[in-house]
Length: 182
Image (cartoon, rainbow, N blue to C red; front, side, top):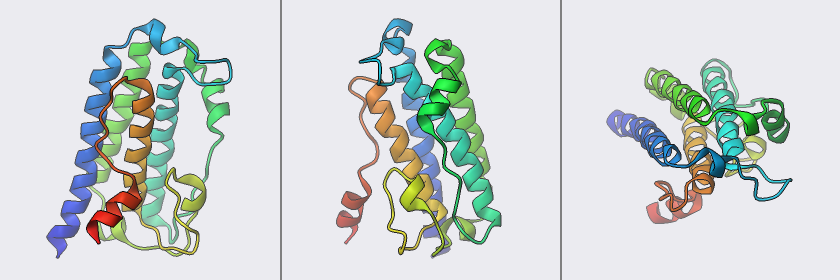
């Protein structure tokens, strides 16, 4: 049984590695002009979406670290639009920003590999995944760090499909996954 739990953690980490590799390859082929083109003044450009993924990586990394040492999974949110604006991602260099995104995710992978498996799958009643996750979990439901990692990966693929034309998603929406397993 422990091996199955280990496989789940390893699979989520492996998914993250595959997603980052696909993102690096795909974004690397997009011109700076295309990345900085705004669909309209109120929408993020592709480079701003990439910047948002950097912010997401930093925020989720600290959530995973805190989640190991606290008795709940309640984490701070952040104002995504404000952070994109304050970080001025629209005027950032593509290669530098792409390098930041890859680096922070490699760092996250290295941290996750050393996580205690029991803490990774420990169920918590007290969480705010109904507020911070892309695929929200009802506040009355149990939540775990492994779900947070799945949601992080899913969120990343959502945005990579906005950046990279023809991006092929690795992950299915969570409900579809559950339906297949039942």
